[in-house]
Image 1 (spheres, rainbow, N blue to C red):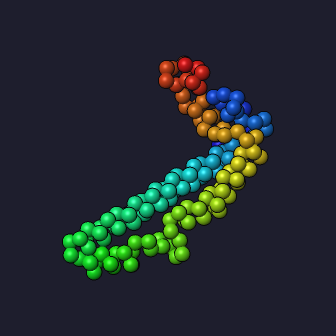
Image 2: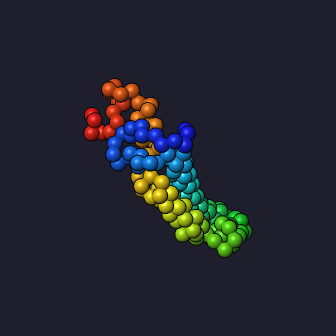
Image 3: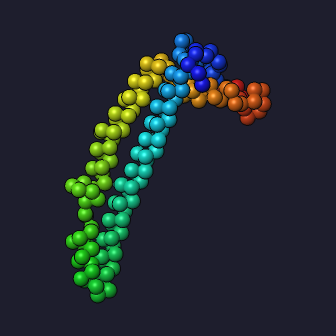
Length: 151
């Protein structure tokens, strides 16, 4: 895309390019929004990590109980003392990692993505993608409607 203003259509007014916004600006806002989407996915993986570590800790407790019941009290004790309840990183359980991520990186990323959209696209979301949809769909063909209201 070039840097000139382009008044190509959007799928609807909610996603329309603000007057005067250039191709380069719309593309940049789209790139920042795409980055936030990746951060959101990473956040989901972090929550999965948090839940899996918690479940593993409880499973280790069950395993320790089973080892003790089957005559392996020494191994059960090692699991309980060395691994169960162990910080996953220095000084932190996984919930503390999630909280730090949310309070710092994720909150900052969301605020800055919003600032970019507010300044560049008038706060509108997915302007770049809406223009791509308008360009790439086959107008008038079933399944290629611009919006649900066009069904």
